Amino acid sequence: MEGNKSVEYLKVVFETIKDITKSEIKVAVILETSIYILNLFDSLKNQCARDYIGCSARRHITYIYSDRLSSRLLGWSREGVDQLARLRVYGSNGVNLYDLNLKRKQERIKEAKITEPDFKVAE
Image (cartoon, rainbow, N blue to C red; front, top):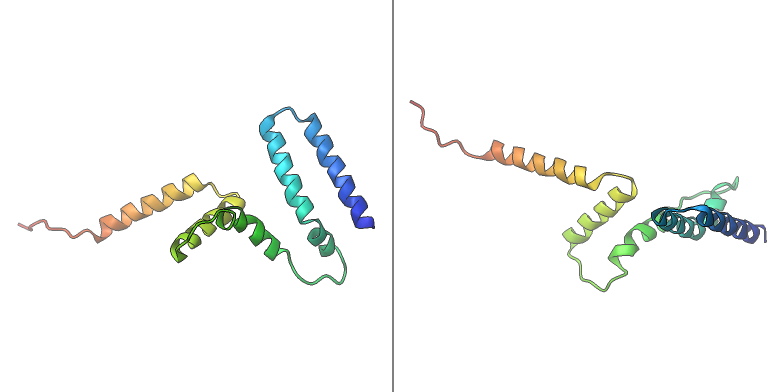
């Protein structure tokens, strides 16, 4: 029963924060965060227990991947699903995807220059 009180308290806290927030973008972030935390509440609470063994990896994987990979009826190649999954994880970890893409592009250009044959004739 104590868990239900805590969940209700959290809902009130998130609702209060949302009500005093003026920016629509910040309200959207608050709503997304509240959904995330409330969905993981039992796992988070269990981690504080003295005899708890385990982690919330399964829920994190479900939350991060299912939003894009299974919520739409699409077919995925192994390479495509691997790349998209990596992008989702990078984004969730706060990696700037634009900078990451730019760095990889520069590495490919550098690599291509190294492997280009030099057809210059020595005099």
